[in-house]
Image: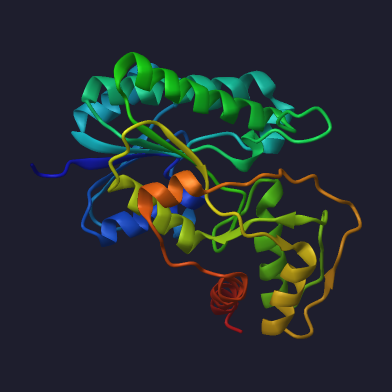
Length: 298
């Protein structure tokens, strides 16, 4: 049976653009669905990309885009991030939770599975109240539970991936975009002050994209929710990695700690996919700074 298109929500975003580039390189047709049109020079221009401008909150728009273009796979990335959910909580709930339901309904109608979607490390409970630390995390935790119910009620398979700090070219918004901002500042010989400190899971966009591609080929027997990695680095180690590439980088560490979740576990993902090529912090830093140096001609 011939493969249909890959329906990608949030296709104009950071991870969406990276994934679309990788999918078209594989020869896949992509339907990029987003409220906003693709941005500037980073927008996917490869043959085989159909851009559909629509609102993830509108069930009819999502359903038509999936069915009319003959999608056979879905990657759901569209979401409002931490600061936006804090500022506009009702809209955040509509986009992140109602939008998720709309995607699952379209998958159900089209017989698509698994739906590969982004959850977040933010969904993990943490101190002081043993709960997600922000509304974004609450919404994402709810989406994980909704996905399980859709499997029980309708047999819709899904894979929920919990990134922590994804960095690399194109990452511009969200609280964890600071890593990319710091690397860009170093490449451009500018000062950068870190907004907070702590230990986190830093993953380069190339590795995360590879994981998503592998998930599209997977056949889970039940809903899967998994952290992507358990490997952590501190912000001081990020600064050290940047200075190994740009020795005189003008970086200012922060003494404001950022609470991090504990008990990370990527066993479900390892069980499903096996192993994949890691992009460690040094290599990811080198790739990211090289990209920004090329942009500035340095």
